Length: 220
Ligand code: AMP
Image 1 (cartoon, rainbow, N blue to C red):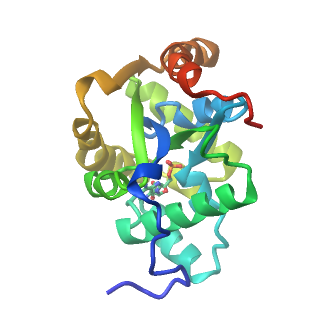
Image 2 (image 1 turned 180 degrees about the horizontal axis):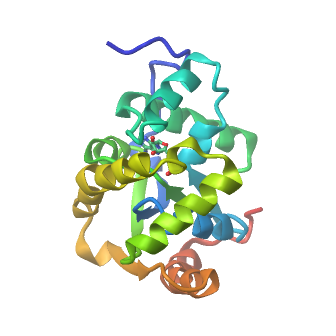
C-alpha cells in the first residue's frame, strides 16, 4: 500500500500522438551520466532532465522527501509508482513554466527509465529516438568518480562502499535490461573513460543529426 506523499494519484493526460521526443542517457552509477548531462543541458535545443537531481531537490522533511531518502540512502530504487508520477508532474511543470519547450526541445532523460516497468509506462509519454549507453569498463574509475562526487556534493549514497556496491548491483539487475526494450539501431554505446570533451564529442556525433531534423531555432 502506497504511503501518502502529497503527490497526485493521477498522471497528467499526455495524448499518445503528442509524446515528447526524447533521448535516454543510460549508464551505471559512476559512468559519467551526471557530467555529460551537465554539459548537454547548456546546449540550446536540449532539455536535460535528471531524475536523481529532481528527487534530491525534494525537501527531505516532506512525506515524499522521506520516502526518497529512505530508498536512496540504501542504494535502492525508489518504487516506480512514486517515480513515474513525480517525473510526469515535474516535467509538466517545466513545460508549463516554459523552460522546457516540447515542440522545440529534445528531451534528454538522465536516470529514467531505470526499470523495464518504468520504460513500458513511459511509452505513452515519450517517443524514444535514441539511447546513449555510457560504458565505463574500469570499476576503479567508477568508484573514484563516485567517491569524489560524494565529497563534493555531500551525497550519502556514494559515501559508503557498501551502498555503491548495492547501486552497481541494482543497475545490473534492474536497469541494464531496459536496454533490451529498444531496437538495436536505436542504442549507441559510448565509452565514458577519457576526457569529458571527448565523451561529449562522441555523444554529440549521435545526437546532432537528430537535433538537425527537429530543431526549429525557437528554443532557449
Ligand atoms: P542518480 O543521481 O541518478 O544516481 O540517482 C540517485 C538515486 O535516486 C538512485 O540510486 C535511486 O535511489 C533514485 N533514483 C533516481 N532515478 C530513479 C528512477 N528512475 N527510479 C527509481 N529510483 C531512482
